[in-house]
Length: 123
Image (cartoon, rainbow, N blue to C red):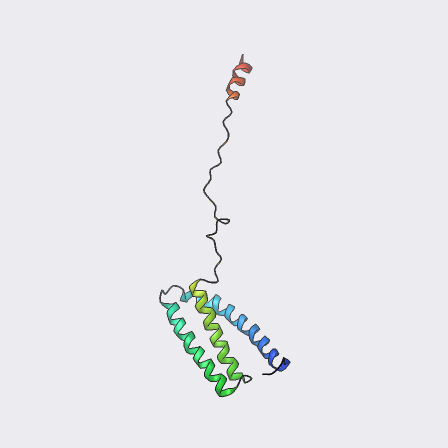
């Protein structure tokens, strides 16, 4: 087991930045159209499992520091993010009791003395 190495960390950090940028762009332009299909999340799950197997194969064939391995890992992570997004893990939760707004109608308080004051002023 190797210790900490900047030669390994710098490509991983660059990969993370590229993956997050690519996923957000794909989410805006492509993945919103996938949500309309009900069975799409299961297709994405199968693709994710296949890409996970491809990632394990690429690690054994090319090694952990080759660019082919990073491409396979990136495709796997994007597919995994897409599956979780289709399941709804990235949505804001609005069902909590603090965010729930009840339909409360605010009614003015009845003031019975007002009628008595009007009759005294008119005389």
